[in-house]
Image (cartoon, rainbow, N blue to C red; front, side, top):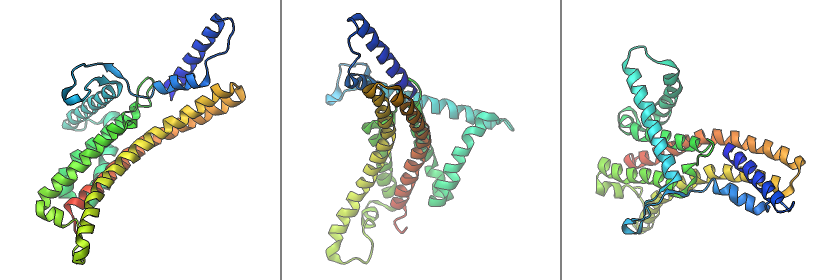
Amino acid sequence: MIHLLNAAVETAAHGAAEAAEHGGGGAHDAGEIMQHLIAHVFDHPLITIPWKPFGVDISITKLTLMMWISAALIFIVFRTLAVRQRSVGARGRFVNFFEPFVIYVRDEMVYPLMGNVRGKRYLPLFLTQFFFLLFCNLLGMVPWMSTPTGNMAVCAAMSFTTLFTIFAMGMMEQGVFKFFKHLVPSGMPVLLLPILFVIEFVGIFIKCFALTIRLFANMTSGHIVILTFLGLIFIFQSYFVAVPSIGFALFIYMLELFVAFLQAFVFVMLSIIFINMAIHPEH
């Protein structure tokens, strides 16, 4: 939000300078201004790598850098927490801030659904998903940063971790044959078994696809709404529109802060449910 406002001011100033240079002509077209603002949101290469193995572009983009920063922050934060927890009585504000999130995910989300024994095995996965998504979401609210979870590919990769765990751990817990057998409820008519099997099998992929779309849509919609309010300023070029537009944009920005936490919780909760259904077919 802040970097969008900064970009808007810079674009407007640049347009005014060009107008003065060309004898007082009109400022930039509103469409050009919006394109300039949107360019700060979309991904773009920072370091271009010409080598493309199997035709895949492996250039380092802005979103790649954001994900590296998120991963580094997670490592630094929890490495520090682990060191401090080894010292008896050493807590402080740093530990007190992150500990409630860890405890909530463990005691209110993982253990109630999966049980303490199995939940303890899967807890590192869910905590990693939660904090990686949270850090990625929050980075997008820092000036001149981008939101990795506002990219479909990043959201799909996160959903793939859940999809892979569903198949891998479902087969390990039940066995390959029983995993596919339990996709269809017992006691169903024989003629319906092929249809139900296909529906349930495809349903696993649909669930993970829904995870992707939900995360992507919620993290992108806030930016689009903010850009819409900022665009009204340049379209109408009036203080009567600018003041309420900035006010509404700031409100959406605060709402995005809440959504950043909420979507991390929702993604992990649904992942817990889907994985638990794969390893506990009786439930």
